[in-house]
Image 1 (tube, rainbow, N blue to C red):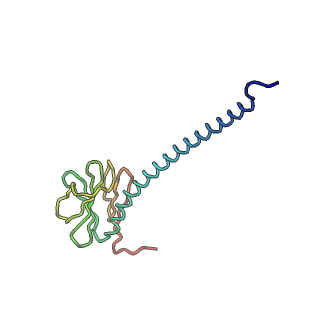
Image 2: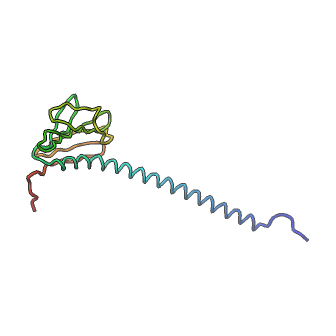
Image 3: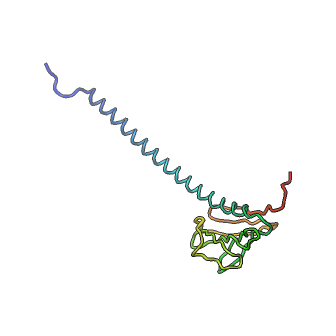
Length: 155
């Protein structure tokens, strides 16, 4: 005598395979979401470090007596980092929500249309703290610029 219909073992096997596939797809979905969040976080961190690091590196590369100063021009706060004794300077300021750098003669006007974008920031404040120390505040945080020119390191 033949049995008609399917064996319950087949249904059980199909159920187990379906359960494993559902678990696999959930795991892949969760992993992709977590990876995307990590990459976004790393990207924001890199932008923050690049912005503040650039300001610090620019000041250190041009470390001469009185190389860092602040001036106001056209309603903007401008961080001026003189390029040695050449009469030229990096002029860093905020323009339309981005931090830009303009390189030119110290006495010349700034040229926002020709300036190079450093990074996005809605906040740009420069505070002189005395003894050649300047604090630059941006959305990315704060960086201190200090002229080490002619000063040995104390031990």
